[in-house]
Length: 175
Image (cartoon, rainbow, N blue to C red; front, side, top):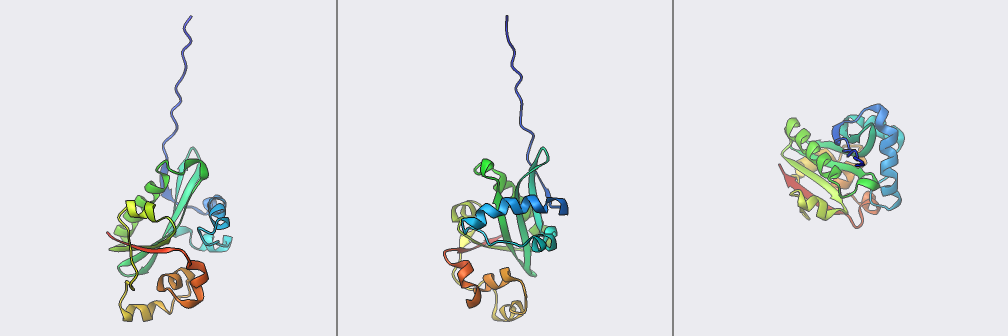
């Protein structure tokens, strides 16, 4: 008697815009990275306020990853808060989310993306290069100083955020 085994194929990972119902799962994904000091912690209220900036990677209703695109200026955005569930690290989930964020950036008219990261090989494989110099003109720098967003302050490399950015690498990609 021959026993046939059914081959179960995992459902595909879908990357889509985040919804408010995803925020608690996003926070759970982010927290282990915060504990390792790879990502900055985000208050729940901050995640709800910024939910429209996020995409999530989902399979069978389970949130496997999240990442955000924050517009800094007319041509410049920042990729933020990319987090992937431990069980799918290295399975292309981060890659798919980054591609979706870059497509969103192009749709918005951005031509450059910035990130502040410890994950230099991941971003390097996607065309980001390390930058040391200021990537905006002095005039735009002055305008950005008016922002109340902490991530913008990190981008500007302001002294009061130095403890948050120690060890991170500033990277930029031209789209």
